[in-house]
Amino acid sequence: MSSKSFAAEPFALPFDPQRTALVMIDMQRDFVEPGGFGEALGNDVSLVRGAIEPCKRVLAAARAAGLLVVHTREGHRPDLTDCPPAKLTRGGETFIGTQGPMGRILVRGEQGHDIIPELYPVAGEPIVDKPGKGAFYQTDLHLILQNRDIRTLIVCGVTTEVCVTTTVREANDRGFECIVPQDCVGSYFPAFQKAALEMVKAQGAIFGWVSDSAAIVEALRA
Ligand code: TIU
View (tube, rainbow, N blue to C red):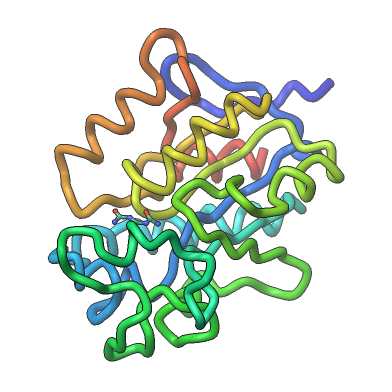
């Protein structure tokens, strides 16, 4: 048993580096850069860009500590056959699959669908393409984690109240212990960011722990 632990709320989370993975959720140009899906939905992407630098530090520490690093991308097949029709007509407007400044929005293979250069995967880091908000729905993420006997997930990315916490809630049900560094996740809505993080750790870590990049980096270096 490892004696390492992450400083966190509501209490410290013990972890074994060999059984811990970093899951970087949807740090794609479509969500983080101007001209993508996030902005098409009416959001100010500058609000989520603050997560980039803290994510870079956690990613570097995770790589140095030999953790499994998994990246996810939200998006669909070019023919959109894997996109529920209801998502294509949401709000009376159509964004998914339409042409944006970085190619067709949320379509696999397009520029905007790819991960931002600052956090680009390196060789050996699996990329999970997901058609939904949660990273387990219709993907092989559970299999990848199970094959490495992973128990603890450090979950970073965007957006906090959508893809990050959808993933954390389900990971918790699947038996993983999740820690969310609060400065490594971003939302277009400051009130949602705050509420989503409070929900994770409420009721004695009801579905996870909340920490920050400095505490994660320190524990991984120790
Ligand atoms: N719109 C929004 O907040 N998020 C998404 O649509 N996807 C993710 O969170 N990745």
